[in-house]
Image (cartoon, rainbow, N blue to C red):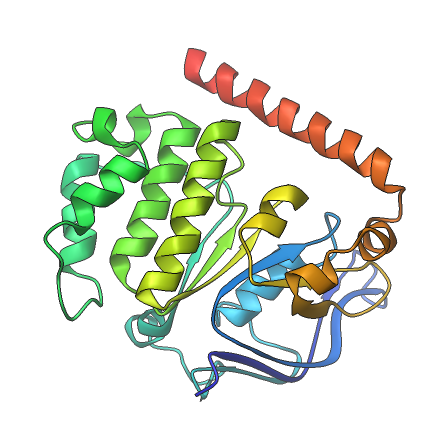
Length: 266
């Protein structure tokens, strides 16, 4: 059974001038295998849109997206769709009356795991470093803590495929590595597939089986990570020399770290 399949999919956003469209996909076909799949490319090349299409939260202008052989156009029941695929938005924020600890149990109890594991929640709490926030509410924790909490929710929910849009941008560097390592091993052991976008090529290389590389002027290219993420392919996709891309990535991470520290001090 195919997990996610794009069949002759076209999608575009209209600009202010209705006659001008920003084409994200044009007659694009692909079938995805199981595993960890990273989305890499410049901002504005369609990574988030692709994830939304693959999750059935956007529908193509032409063509079809199939989620476990079900057409996303008719897979409109939220509960049914989320058995197969769920979505983590970038920079999610929400307020709750319940504590993090209570929410972890609620999500697991109401998710799609047929067989519950007694050590699952304690293991997640340890690996995602949630011990200190179990008695707090979502509006009382930092961006990094909230991101780790949302990742925990997504795993506890039990969807077969999880779409993650920049899931670790607010984490410190050591935490990013630890979380990605956990996600990678979890996907293997529980046989789930995770699509994720990142601004860190090194982490994507280390913690992915496949890469979907996005370009500004042509359709995305998909394949095994060691074949797709070569120096030449990366330079073509980002349209700058590899050395300058490293500097750009470092500046981006430093800016995020500054925002995270500022958030903690508020």
